[in-house]
Image 1 (tube, rainbow, N blue to C red):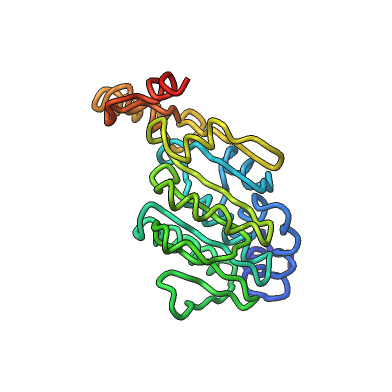
Image 2 (cartoon, one colour; image 1 turned 90 degrees about the vertical axis):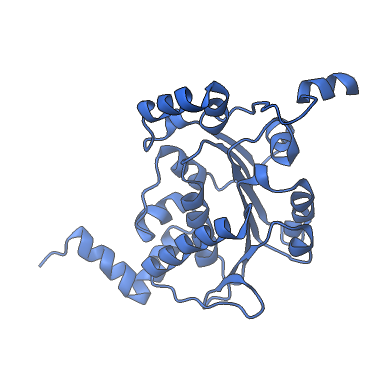
Length: 259
């Protein structure tokens, strides 16, 4: 009797040989890995990011873009396909980091890969192949001293500049990958600077406004515009770096003084 697609999927997840074969088949395409192995279907923009294989990625995303799911899929792909690797996740706060790890745990369960915690680490996962994912606090002292193959900064616009600066050398020894994703927060800080000025080979810059998010509707965004104003929607949903009135001098004023 011919097995259905769902039966085949369960075979991949429950049989170690088939599972490893599926992981190897999609080791160079994280988008297909997400769809076939993780059973999570990314939207067109998410799939493009995952498929890119970019060494450095800067994702300027609207709210509800799915940054956490994207991060979890990429991190799960990394640890499943790169034995012995170390991946680091830094978020604005521990609660957000825990959200990323909850999705990683779900994905690893779907794949059927067991994992354990790491002694001395508050948030960490260790796989049988020796790969590790470590969640770190958004503090300069906490991120120093690591060597990593992949770093993911979630809501990077809200991570202090000193933390980002301390993380930059972490991937140097292993020539690792560095991704950051965030909704904008004004025209200042490392996330804005890197989005506006960073260049070079292996760099992927992606803008993902709400209009490219199939999970958001025009009616919802328009209601927010009426309730919170145009500047709020431009920043939170249109990926624009808006001056929000928190500072006496705007970014343009500062640049004018520097000139």
